Image 1: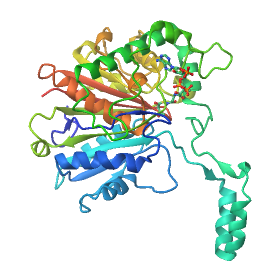
Image 2 (image 1 turned 45 degrees about the vertical axis):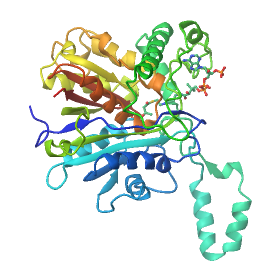
Image 3 (image 1 turned 90 degrees about the horizontal axis):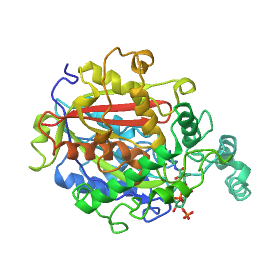
Image 4 (image 1 turned 60 degrees about the horizontal axis):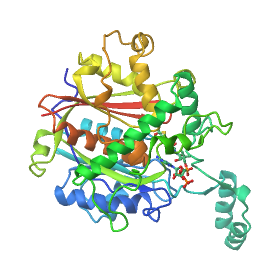
Length: 420
Ligand SMILES: CC(=O)CC(=O)SCCNC(=O)CCNC(=O)[C@H](O)C(C)(C)COP(=O)(O)OP(=O)(O)OC[C@H]1O[C@@H](n2cnc3c(N)ncnc32)[C@H](O)[C@@H]1OP(=O)(O)O
C-alpha cells in the first residue's frame, strides 16, 4: 500500500536546546526562538517549502511560518505557511508537506516552536471592542480607558494548559484517564526515571550532539536530571489532584518548556540535496485519529491511530523495531500502550480486527522522551521524528518505526517510518 503519489522521506533536522519554563530561553517569543534554527537549517539546504507552527496563540501574528522565514532574512520566493494541531503541530506540518511535495517542490523544511514561558494576556472581547471603537472616535478617551483597566478586563487565552471547552488542565484530564486504566503512581515514576536516565545517557553518549544547535543562552537541554531517583520521584506531591490522592506529579509529567525543532521532508530528488550522511527514513504512511474524550480520554487517540496504521500494513507490534511515543505524561504513554495490549480493545474500540501480539516495551523511547527532555508543544513532533530517524538509521535496512504524538482535543497523530 503506497500512501503518497511518490516516495516521501523524512531526514533528521536540528533543534534548539530545550529550556526550562522561565529559564534561559524565556526572553524569546516563538518567532525569535525559531529564527536561528531556520537559518541554521537553510544554511544546510535551501528548501522549496517552509511549514512551521506554534500552539500558544499570539496577538502579534497569524502565519508564523512566513514571519519566521522573513525575519530570518531567507529567500522570500520560498512559500511559507503554518500548521497547528496542539501537541501534534509539527507532525501535521510534516504530513502537510509530504502531501504537497512533487511538481516544483522536492524539499520541505518543517517544524515548530513554543515559548511556554510567555503565554499572552489579552483584553476581554467586549472591553477590546469598546476601546477599539473609542480609538476611532475619541483617542484621548481610549487612552484613559486603557489606563483605567483592571484585572477584570483581562483574559488569559491560555489558561494553565487547559482544554478550552472543559476548562480543565491536561493534567486533570490525564489524572482521570490514569485512574480509568489503573496506571499506578509507581509505574508512572518508574517510567519517568527511565526517561531521565535515557536522556542523560543520550547526552553523555553524544547522541544529541548533531541534533541540537547550541544557542548563546543555552548550550544543551535543561530538563533531563542526572540527579533524580526513585526516592526523589516518590516524594513529590500530586501536581493536579489537590485532594492529595492523585498520581501525576511534577516528576512524572512533561515540564513547562521553551524550544524549537525542525526536520526535512523530501522526495528522492530533495533528499539528494542534503549533505551525505544526513540520517533519513521513508515516511511510509501516517494516521490521524480523534476520539470523544468523554468516552475514551483526552490523550488516548494514539491508541486508535496506531492499530489502524499497523493493520493497514499487516504489521504486528513486534514487527516494529523502534517506538518513539510522546510522553505528555508518563501515565499517558502507559495508558496508550495499556489500551493496545488489552485483549479485544483494538477490535472493540479502534475497529481493527487483527492479532497484534505482545507489545515490545524494550523498544520504546531509547533516548528518553518528553518527561525528561521537555515538551514545547509545537516542537515535540519534529523532535520525535528527527530523533526516531536517527535511531532508525542505526538499525538494519527495512526496520520499521512508529512515531506517536497525542494532542489536546482528543487527537493522536502517528507516522510509520522504514529504514532505507
Ligand atoms: C497539549 C497537547 O496537545 C497534548 C499534551 O502533550 S498534554 C501535556 C501538555 N503539557 C502540560 O500539560 C504541562 C504539564 N506540566 C505542568 O503543568 C507543570 O510542569 C507541573 C504542574 C506538573 C509542575 O509544575 P511546577 O510545580 O512548576 O514544576 P517544577 O517547579 O519544575 O517542579 C516542582 C518540584 O518538583 C521537583 N521535580 C520535578 N521533577 C523532578 C524529578 N524528576 N526528580 C526530582 N524532583 C523533581 C522540582 O525540583 C521542584 O522542586 P522544588 O519545588 O523543591 O524546586
